[in-house]
Length: 181
Image (cartoon, rainbow, N blue to C red):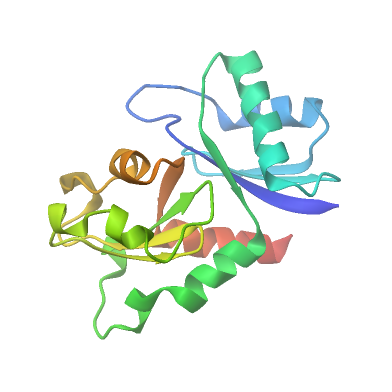
C-alpha cells in the first residue's frame, strides 16, 4: 500500500469549484482509495492505494472529481520524500531572519531542468525570488502572495506545466500528517 498526497488546484476559492471535503472523501473511497484524509478546504488529500504510479493516481482522482462534481481540477500528486526534500533543499530557510509568512512552494507536474529558472524570467516579477529543485519551486514573496504577478498561472505559462502553490505552514503540516500515517 502506497500513500500519495494529491494537491488539488483551484477548488473552494472565491466560490468557484466548490467541493465539500467530506463529499470528496466519500467519492474517493467509493472508487477504491483507502485511508482518505483531507486537510483544509483548499484540496490536500491523502490516499492509500496499491497503485504506485503518482500520475495514474492523479488521473483517477481527476476523473472522479469531474464525474462526481463536474469540475475540471488540475492535480499534482506527491510523495513523502517530496515534502521532506522541501525542508532539505529550500535555500530560503538558511537565510537569516526569513519571514515564514512569505515562503511558499509551487509543486509542478514534471521534473524541471536546473536552467528552468531562466524560463521564469524572474526579472519580470522582482523583488520576488525563486529557486528550483526538481519538481518544486521555492518562492519568497517580497510583499505577499496576494500582491504579485508570480503566481501559479505565471509559472504554468512560462514553464508549460501544471502547478499548485502551498504556503510554508501548509507544507509543514502536510509533512507532519505524512509522518502520522
